[in-house]
Length: 111
Length: 113
Image 1 (cartoon, chains in turn purple, yellow):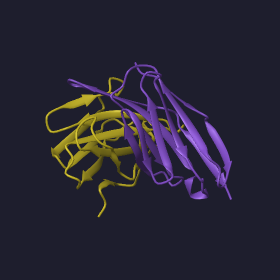
Image 2: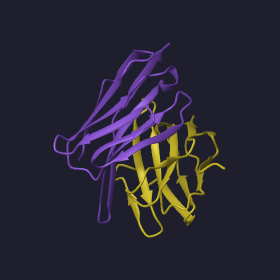
Image 3: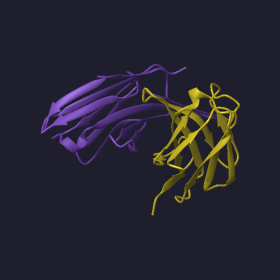
Image 4: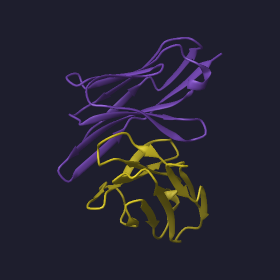
């Protein structure tokens, strides 16, 4: 059974700061997802990655398969980035699909 | 156009009742999912389903059953509702199981009294 740990649980930053959220998992995976849950409850997929690095605007996600670790970075943070960020480790194989979620990191960006 | 839609948005019902939540996606995806988010905001996958295969999380009680009339719809039926079923239920879809990003519906807040 995969266990997914996120840190920190809560994070408060000043506008403009560089933010890093970490995610580690215990067993091999086929992909790792980063999700954003807005204060209103809606969930948006930010990234799905299985190796290396992906960038979208001010968001960057990296994964190190050997170390079973992924990070989500936000550059030049803005109050609208305030949300809960969730990582999820996915394993899919013949007839099997598992997705294990971390408990989320609540980010508050203060103007 | 909404990519993944769910109805109803809110559902309040009494213990013991049977209820359904509907989900539709217009993305042409092969795989759909149901997730439960509990009061502590922790997400858990309940089912993943494509037109060939249902994969069930073993912790889901058999009172919960997904029903798919076609590839674009995956409804969630819940029998004999219990207080502990109160949660937000999210539907999602992806190109194929485990492939591509998932697109989430807006969620259905179920309250069992």
